[in-house]
Image (cartoon, rainbow, N blue to C red; front, top):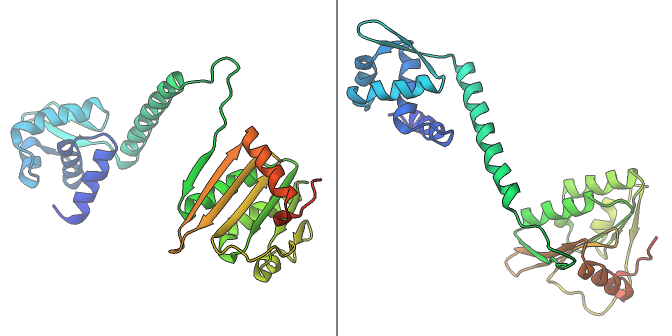
Length: 253
């Protein structure tokens, strides 16, 4: 098989076909129509196996059988096969996640759980930051000393929430960070008071509605790790402690 065909077979296997089923289906599209012998001649599927494989493909709605002597097979169109496999994938996905929904554990009684999560990796911290900012309904505080931690998506999210009526404050001692938001009239930009020597490990902070927070640090090699919490007593208390310090002198609205 060529490299392209090998990749196609692998892809069909990911969609639920066996290797033989994928090879027979591809071979029949190459032939247009053919017998078991025709298929076996251009694949490594034994002729004796082609019959059972074709029967399986027919039951899945991927080929048609002509009751001739010898029996001939014809694949359904690419569009029809695509729709058949897509529908099957969605059914299996629904079945899998419906089961997960039935077995996932729900909090029992009045017991509460203070969820504090760790996220590692720049891209994942980016995604979690955007998620926290997107859920703010009243107030956002976002701060960082590193311009590269203000992604286009984060900037766009801050502007969108501000335009939706959320109070948005960006805090940074770094001119490049403050300048990035200088033209956005809907966003307040703050330069916090100096407080000792700036920690070169600090990454970013995101606060949303006084009950969601993300704090990150940057390692020597540039990797980023963050902790975050949302809707928890831990998040509320940590936000109060941070905002009561000189590190983040931002008044609550």
